[in-house]
Length: 219
Ligand code: CA
Image (tube, rainbow, N blue to C red; front, side, top):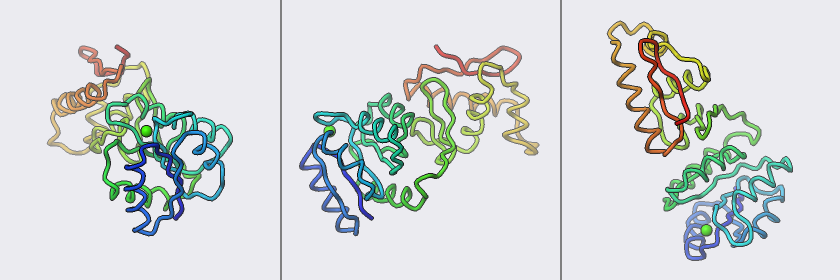
């Protein structure tokens, strides 16, 4: 595997590159956005690992340009944990994955292996609503892991747009034939989801429509 690694922090880049090469991954390193962009256009990489904050040109700009030019090399964005908006933007403009800094190189290697096993043109199953990106393949919302049921509920809410989803409908579809499921399961899961949306600082909230059900709304 050969990757392009765009990162301006030399000490970090050296350490990560060393570990990647030890596990058999060939790394070309660029320490600024301009060189990163020039190299990213080469059709020789299995994956591009792209930091967001870079001198001369940001990782997001590079990503946007190469995707507009039809370059489909898988991209893993790197960003500080707090930069939720950058992550969302990155996924929206075509990043395949991202990793919050600081990260373990082991984790990066696992992501690289996962991404390069799939064909570059693989279809990503994502749904968007305002600043939320629900990834049904990896079962995450803006990168935060969801349980199976949480993902199913969010999928329903996003797909129904501004229409209210009835509580009974959710219960029947998510819990199905589980006769032990109680009405308040839905409420409990809504509170889990609300906490997750809040932790993401999303502008979207789950609104309770009294006596009917739930819908997504912008605050
Ligand atoms: Ca940086």
